[in-house]
Image 1 (cartoon, rainbow, N blue to C red):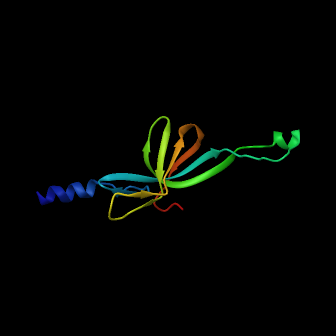
Image 2 (tube, helix red, strand yellow):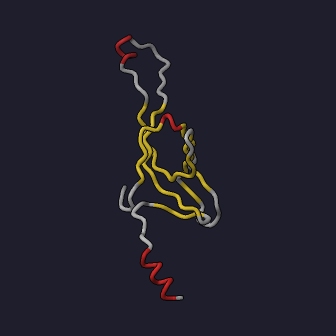
Image 3 (spheres, rainbow, N blue to C red):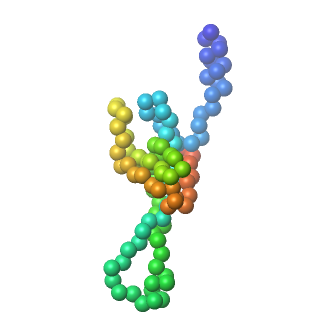
Length: 106
């Protein structure tokens, strides 16, 4: 029996992606690129208005849950209890890129 466990352990590949396990659930770390509203309450010429764009944002976080409409993320967590902090929920439509980060990625 011990031989089987050792063989099975050898076959398991270590994930090349940065992840953590909380309460037996694995979470992966992502670089999330997204668009945010940009606002300006001041006066602008037509030329300035034509150059007005959304802010291109980047968030680094673990993905907690994902559906077709939304992505829930967290960046901080409690090592002893199942508790999450620095949480966000993104409408899927604002996401311009999701990149699962390697262990050695920064």
